[in-house]
Image (tube, rainbow, N blue to C red):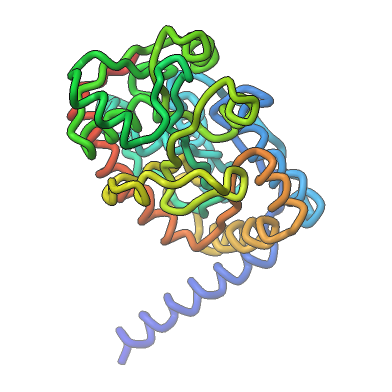
Length: 321
């Protein structure tokens, strides 16, 4: 009986603590660390939500840009902060990629973080230079199979999502295509526009202007469903590669051991903001889809993505630049 009373007392104390946190959170400004410079996709998507959260919460949400080292600098800054919910991290798909790309990073991508929730997804587009004379995805695959190693695809650097999206595409289609890494996507796109390279797999927001102007040709979307931004563009799945799916995603993490009440309060407010028509429209203008969801759903996504991207890292033998 004494043990039962003791256990019941612990449960009641835990519930009371959770209720107290939920009622008083946030008690000070929330610092939202972004692993990219101002005006980047990460920064823009975070600020759209941060501005709305500031309107709704009793404390402001302040963006803290910490670019560099493939998001490792930002992640380490988060883990040096108190696990009380007042410091959070904007995390892109590179969080899952780095788990196998950089096995020596000083933290564990799952164990050392608490998932708050997913923010958005953004599809990538398989694009070619009109000079390549390739009009469809089937034609691209046929060309690559007829001349192994002759076609080239570019990315913004070794280990980037664009690089590994290309490696996953090669695995799915059984192709031999040469990868050419650049120091950033802008310079790679310049060479794609001039016909010096044959193709790229890039986020939609980056390539839409070039596709609509006819300077680049879009062959397929890497997402499982079509996008309203390019409704006539089929998906890679539709065109026969049913196991191929690559989506850039963004979410929010907190340090491990952050109280569940704080995580749930943040998740609830972020989901409400993501459902606002103005936020949905702002995200769509960035080529992104507002998602939301539970902390567990985001945690499960990260785990599955670590496995998926790990296959691409292993196949490509990619190393950190």
